Length: 338
Ligand SMILES: Cc1cc2nc3c(=O)[nH]c(=O)nc-3n(C[C@H](O)[C@H](O)[C@H](O)COP(=O)(O)O)c2cc1C
Image 1: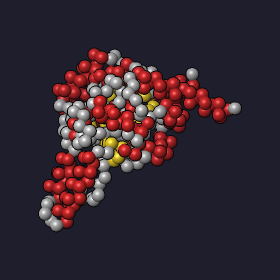
Image 2: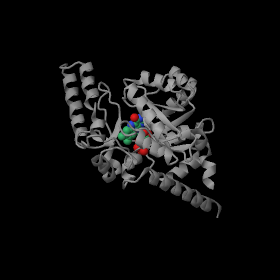
Image 3: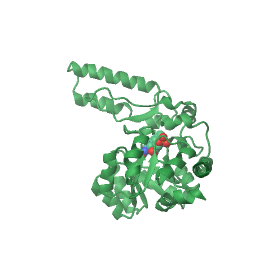
Image 4: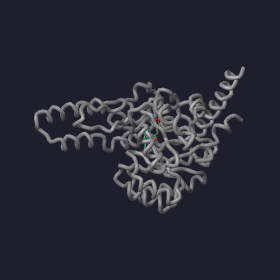
């Protein structure tokens, strides 16, 4: 099978049948979704998110009960419980740690590695990729701005040329952000990717606890409905998040314009204005995922929302991806050699 050649690096690195990662999604990637992905031959990743250390520990133990296949734990370096979560991971000697959010310190990468974990780090720019390799990352996840959730500002296509083509012969590079089909995945693997990371498509899976109203929004969305939160002025920094546009986006823009007017007139301190911007989205992802508040919650999803047309089981998603990858390998071989 042609796929053996192109799956080899990712399969061996992750210890899975198919090098397809379901990226961690805060409030979404709990034991149920993660174990379903790993049991179907992919690689599930538990989201550390803002979870208190004890809750994360329970979730890890629960996932280990539900699957004996490998899975990873994702830590957000700017989360309030990050240091405690990292200590926990090291104590539990888990096999895979994925650092997300901003990027980890060199010492933190070393702590994870010394505990026996393989470390995967996100890279949303070429310079972050270089830094993470220098810090000792065992693999990279290149993620373009098309992705759902917190995003950078560089497209997957540019990152492929700046990073994948340059470093994939030294270190496994997984690619995410904007991938919804096996057909594209096949070409990314042929370009040198060790594997593929998807988020949005799995958020709609039957095993995902995303509220049905939120799932329906993703299924009905066009690619262009998944927008990144704008920043209008450097005095009010905004962490970009890609989500399906709803009322909250308009309210967030209005808030920023009002605060900028107040700042111009010295009616508010910059700190106070920045706190209002920061606090605006607090709790909004949980509100969307758990409560199904599609007007005011944060409907985090990538532009692949435009490619997701139905709810499927995790196994169906993975099998469809693998069939399409295999078909594309064959078609490409025929195109090239006949
Ligand atoms: C609802 C949601 C929550 C997410 N939360 C996280 C997170 O906690 N940590 C993380 O590293 N990435 C997070 N992501 C990003 C995904 O893991 C994945 O990398 C991304 O969705 C891939 O792009 P795609 O949406 O185009 O498939 C999130 C994405 C979504 C849609």
